[in-house]
Length: 114
Length: 110
Image (tube, helix red, strand yellow):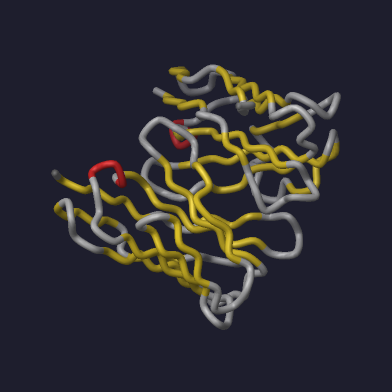
């Protein structure tokens, strides 16, 4: 069964360093989402792409976070510089687009900032 | 801002017991989804409800969407240890944006 691939699964970094997360959605899925999830809480949307275009980045801290999906397939989420409060699980999800009610999530990238 | 509050936040029960998790909002949603998330994994979709008053059953799980499409409930009958996890409701509007609830962490002991 096709899956959303994310890497790395775990990342430990020191504050002020740069980190990057990668996501490869299910083939053919036009919509890609990056969520941040604090332990035990619900995911919060950071950015949503439709193909290569950003359709919602209203909750993305743009002073330190950036996201791109240059060819409309895989995507990268970057944090520079990382802060202690960025420690969280970063989840990528994709959907077909027209069937936008069904999101498929990757296993996530857990970030710890020391 | 649309918010989805879930209750209870934590639930710890014995195998065989029944339980209900609630998801409430002051906003109307066009659809409501329930996900289950296990530690270290991403959420997995359980069900989507789209019609006010709709009830869906998935084995021992019963999902209901409120008549006004502002709230939902998840009822589990005869809980099993395999039901342990974080249960998340998520509301969908007209803009593809999915708003997740605050989550309910369920622990079922054998």
